Structure formats: C-alpha cells, structure tokens
Length: 114
Length: 445
Ligand code: SF4
Image (cartoon, protein in one colour):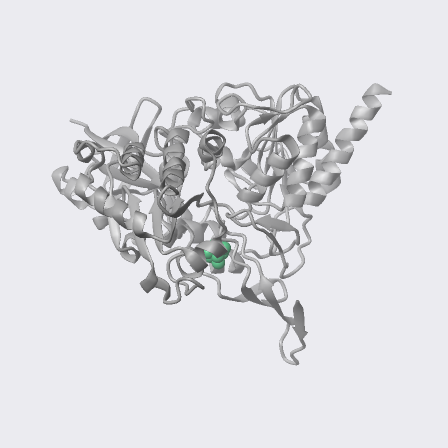
C-alpha cells in the first residue's frame, strides 16, 4: 500500500556550499538526490537510512534513497533539495501566477524492494 | 580600495580587497575583506559559510570560452551563432538575470526589445507572486538598516535564514545592537512560522509549526485579530496553531514599537502563491493601525532585486513582460518562462546566469531541451549542457565590477578581486546586441 505524503522541496546550506564547488561534484549530487523523512514515518514503513523509495504523483516518478530528517520534519512531510528529482514531480500548471506548485506537493511513496 | 603588498617569497602577489561585496545571496554583504593570491581568494574575512564557499570556489574555470553544439569555439564564432538564433526566432524568451550586474541586465532588456521577445527573470519562480501582491495591496517597506536599528519584533515566515541567508540574523535583523535596540537580541522578540522545524527555530523565541499549505489561513486569522474581529477557534484544525497562541502573538505584535515580517518562499511557492503574499503584506498594513510594521520578502539570489528594479524601470513591470508587440505587456501565467516553455510556445531562449534545466517543471524542461538555447554562465550547468551556444563568463563581483541591489532595494557597487580571462555578461551581451542590430539593419536596407 503506498503511503500519502506532502513533499516540500527546498534549499539547504550544504546545497549552497556544494553548488559553488560545482553541480557535478559528489557532494552536490548526493544533496539533490536524497529524500529526508521523519524518523517515525521511517519506523512505521520499515524504512532504514539508505533504503530506496519510489515517490510519485500524476506528473512523474523518482527513485531516491532516504535519510532521516530528524526532528526537522513533521510526520507526513518529506523534504528534498531542489534538483532533477524534484523537477520530475512538478507539473507545468502555474494557475496564472508564473510559478508552478513547487512546495507542498501531494505524493505517494513506496519502498523499493531490492 | 585595493592595497598591494609585495611579498618577497610569495609566488603570487598578495592583494587585500577591502569592502568587497558578496553576491551569493540577497543579503549582498558589502563588508568583505578578501585576501587574494594570484587567481585565488585565500581568505574572506566576515563571510559566512556560504560566502566563503562562493569566494573560495570561483577560480578560473578550465573550460573553453564558448561552446557551439557542444564543441569548443571562439567568442567571435559564438557571438555570430547566438545572434543568428535570436534574430531568426519568432518568439524568443530571455530568462535568468538574477546573478549578474544591473549593467548586464539592461543590455538583456535591450536585446529582448530589439527582437520582440519575452522578458522574464528568476523572480517569476521565486518572489514573483509577491511582485503581483505588491500591485494588489502595496508594500509597507523599510531598509535592512531600519530593521537593524529599530525592529523590536521580528516574524520570519516560510524561510530559513540560518541556512539560506546566514548573516541576516547577525548583521541585519535578530542580533545586532541598533540605535533604538541598544541591547541587540535582548531588545527583540522573534517568531518563526514554518512547516519544518529548521535550524532557524533555535534562534527565535516562539516557533509556530504550521501545517503545510495553511499560510493563508494563518495570515488571515492574524489579520482578523489585528482588526479586532473574533476569529473562530477552528483555525487550529487548519493551521495546527491554537487560537490562544495566535492571540498571544498578536498582543506582542501590537506592543512592538517597530515590527518586521520577513517572508520567504514557503509563502510564495505553496498553493495560493500571490494570495499568500497578499495576506502577509496586508497583515503588515493592518498592523499599522496599532504601531509601525513592515513586510519584506527575503530575496535569494545576489542581484534578483536588481533584476526586478531594472526590468521595472525599463518596462514598467517587474517580470513576465512580453515585448512582442513593441510595447510592454505584463501577464504572469502567460508571459512567464515556465508557462511559455511548458506550453511549447517559445522557439529560442537566451538564458543569463541561471539554470532552468535544474529547477523548472518537467514539461518546461522537455521543451527547453528541444529549442536552440544561448546560455551565459561562469560554470557548467545542466542548461549549458543542452545549449546550442554556451558562453563561459567572468563571475560578477569576483572578476567584474558593476552594480547590484540588496534585497531591500539598496544599490551597492562591486569591488572585484582578480581578473578573469573570460568576458563579463555585459561584454558578451553587448557583442550579441551589436550583431543582432547589424542583421536587422541589413534586412531593411
Ligand atoms: S549572508 Fe549572503 S551575502 Fe552575506 S556573506 Fe553570507 S552568502 Fe554572502
């Protein structure tokens, strides 16, 4: 059964510092390709750090490894740094504002069994 | 302001640049003291962690000056191909501009006007909704200097300055001792409103952890309280914040001598967008019935505020401007880049100091990858990788001088640290503009 979540893409200072090193450095790539999740949600869904999950909505689907968002993230909310993965889950509709829904995206999540 | 010290044994000349400006984020701190050895900045006194990484990682890139279809090319060849792409386009878009100087921004506006294209900046996917809200409800505003010297109540809303603008707290808002807040932090009350309990939460007195997508409802409830209207306790169900706590915050807000709401993209990027910004701006306006309050967006890129200013003073609108009919028309949703690309309308793109391939929606990215793109960027980016023509540029503020605007609309000069073999955005855009004009004049003669 896929679980429902709200995804909030954003920026981190690690993304900022590694951006200056270059977008093709390991640091930057790890930062934009890792999903953060509340530890209670991880327990509930039996997901350990480093496990890969599939996150999808009507616009796209991505597979990403998980790390604990510690106390920063409330239950039911996911965080990822802006990048290729978050783009794939964004639709083109801007509701006449010029800005696509870029935070607070409804997504479904399921563990990818290796 | 540069003083040069000859060091006998040092292989490269040591140079100290005082009062240099960091252009990594919208704080645009202009109190940097840079130690420069040859083509490397080895010390950046006063810079935060982001500023240090900005200064230490901008060397002279080992890249060709330009690439055409992925192959190294000279600037001159690339100018011609770029001019051809833009000259022959039916509906070109100009986009980016937030990480370059105002001088370069002006030339980009001119090029777009000459070719009858569409002009938009990264504002449209950052605080564009706030730009729309200013037109709807106005902006009660102040400079960061006023906030530093006067603000005794601060609300940070939908932003994480501790990570995104690390010196905002220490230089401008929370910590500094100011004329009317002589004890600094002790004289100020601070509230953070956010969905995530970010690092900024540690710095404030009260953290209101709201439910996702409830910024509007929270702002509206606070507006009600500011105007003495009874607010229904059900606001807690929607926002996660009990009414009593909101009443308490409102009492504090009313007692303040000078309050400031500093809001980030948690407000503008969530469903509701410009309506969320309007609610926050209107709350600041309402608070002026009681005492002095202002609201200011926290701007991200170094000169995104300059982009708004330059585009506004030259076209009358801040972003999302169509120049296709020979006069400016503003319509977010129609003339904004994300929409023009997702609807597959644009047939060429001039992208300046920005990387839409790494942050636009998938439909927009798909179309951008299918049309000829001209890119100016100091570093290799996802957009430079798909470009027809990619220019390597000097880095503004580190290699080139010019003007940038701080997030509070204060223009500041840049003091470069060392020269780059690459041309500046300004020089490249000027060269493209001259070639486009030549083609246009030839076409009519
Ligand atoms: S706060 Fe921003 S402008 Fe100031 S030093 Fe840090 S990155 Fe640079």
